[in-house]
Length: 248
Image (cartoon, rainbow, N blue to C red; front, top):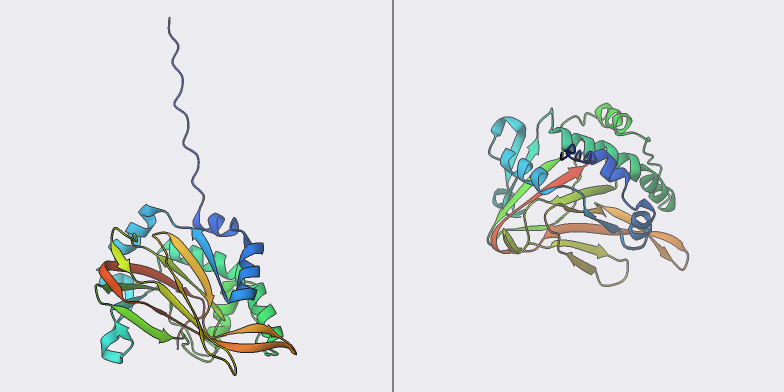
């Protein structure tokens, strides 16, 4: 008489917050300090990327839409999420801020800034609100063939967190070609230095959105950082951006 065995239970999938916590933060902090950016590797699953892309046509989920050509920002468009944001976006923002606040405070000290960042996102958003910055800033960006994003900084008021996160939602080589993330460091009394980072769906990067401290002969000095997106050569590219300060 044969015996039947119970089906093997599926392994519980880690939440987005758990995945953020499990990243190699020692390596990420070293890369941020050395280069002003750090890749995370794959952090979002394919179904999560598809879910966010599917939200894009839903006007009720977003507070505003920006067509880049109208403002000479580039060629493409983006939409800022309305509250309540999708739980995966909210959870990622909370978990990522918790891990990045120590770096933000270390950078402020190195640049001799009086800025300070509380340990939790909720506390930081209260600081934003005290400065009339209450509109959420996480967004989805969409570029078609020929689209691009000019070099810029994402500042929305007096209060600004010095780091932000971007995650590709589309599949490189299948959904689009081109569209590398561009990072340019304007070094004092020297030529600017650029990086082009290719991200595939679900892969993320953390980077300085305005300034970062760089080590020099006389200690740390401030360097200016800007970011953009190179021209999409074919297809359509979606990405999610997570900015930690709210907008005025």
